[in-house]
Image (cartoon, rainbow, N blue to C red; front, side):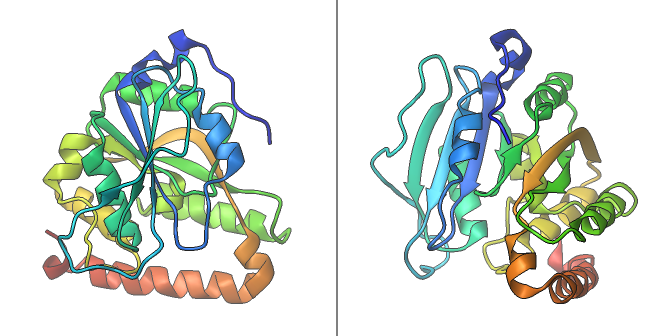
Length: 249
């Protein structure tokens, strides 16, 4: 997949965007995603939140690290943070460190399609108040059966209105703050829980109408059937749990 190249005029609405990319222990930011995000305009911000230690007590703040990513000429600002381990903690730390009025949460192994940034710019320019997500597609590092997973993701997102974090959540900062951000006590399914809280707040769940790619390597290493069945089971259990009032702040 090639890097995306866009013009400043097309992407101008993204000048107020903060991109947050949590990187788990032993993982790294995809070189392709890094290259693609350099196409964001001046004023945008990319915050990579790394971790290499066990979780710290709740409420302990992230520690800034020295910059490891150079700012491209005329492009976004880059920053690297060090946070306690845990995707909720890392994403909250990145959002708190950013100054954009729009937040875009991406996984470290994501890859943009040619239309991703253009569609995102239109979504932000419209100023829609809800949570936006992309149509998930899988890279060619998994089984051929992954096309059925793409259909399943489309149905879960469009029909049930339950997109997941690998679909690149985009939302206004004020909405993210109003629903309390990601719950640091939730070790798995923090993205699923955020969607339920946004829905409970009366904000729409909106398809941005563009593709976003993610790796399917776990389906190769762990088996397509077993991995798919596990994800379906986790989704059902989380939906039952997170839809209950005591789990929605």
